Amino acid sequence: MAVHRTDDPAFVFHRGGKLTVASTVPLDSVEDLSLAYTPGVARVSEAIAADESLMADYTWVSRTVAVVTDGSAVLGLGNIGPRAAMPVMEGKAVLFKRFGGVDAVPICLDTQDVDEIVATVTAIAPSFGGINLEDISAPRCFEVERRLDEALPIPVFHDDQHGTAIVVLAALRNAAALLGRKLGDLRVVVSGAGAAGVAVTRMLIAGGVRASSTVVCDSRGALDRDRADLSGQKADLAAATNDTGRSGDIAAALRGADVLIGVSGGTIGEEAVAGMAPHPIIFALANPTPEVDPAVAARYAAVVATGRSDLPNQINNVLAFPGVFRGALTVGARQITDRMKVAAAEAIAAVVAGRLSPDAIVPSPLDPAVAEAVAAAVASAARDEGVDSARARASQTRA
Image (cartoon, rainbow, N blue to C red; front, side):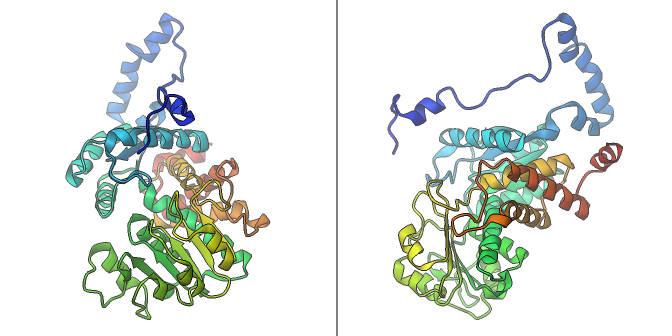
């Protein structure tokens, strides 16, 4: 438990919060006031009432995202509630603005009931161009995202799932390229069957990893079709992967595996890692303590990645979500599809494709080229799939 200390630089940095609201128009004269508010604003409101599509041009909605949490799974801190989650949600909003040029508003809900979350977000959705779900615990997060995606005509994106998955796919593409391997030839083990594990597995398969060669493990071991304790997302994963029927604990699953993706927060010992195929790829992404000790991973693996900023190859969601939403908002996308996510991963990988090394398989989170590349790729994929808006297409044609 952190102790409140006024001399701690983290507390100094956060004092007063990290966000403010700034006007984009002058308010220096009576004429300015009459345009920004009454009576001029009434003309714009009447026009939108007659044609709601005008809202995209005459309000901030087309460039603004709601960052929504219930505080149930915040970072590695767990269920700390909506008030304690606010510094994290503010931080997310700051990253949206800094890296994607997207305005974001943190919304911390004082409920963990799925029906109430869905109803509340649906009710406030007209104020936003997209919904970024954040730090909502599994398995509720799957239902919340699914229902909101079905109910709303704007993109809904659970970053803990899909942001992580996009960056993992980008990193694995580059690690495989560096080692002269093909994604379809790799035998992959995903340790963790929560929100991130489910999304990572599905994204890797969408990106070229063979489902039959993928094994997912939860705290009880490998997900296989003979396990009677599986339901929901885990049962679906068991049915879609692990064609050889591997069973047993994580060490058994890792025997001969080429890749380990850790998104569990558990601990994987050296003996289990030693049983992998020669020169494996290890992504131990639990933060702040990776599933595999980095020193142990380095003894066996050709490429190692973690979730930590003080180690090489940080798998950081900021490489994905600002550009994903910027691209989706640019074309007025109604949803964020698997094809758009794969396009985002390919764009991230391409930023550093010409200068790969074992310690640099993903770009720096501070690289300004990343969000630009991701936004362009996501926008293009949305147009190709026809999930962009007719109004955005018309604007692009005029431009």
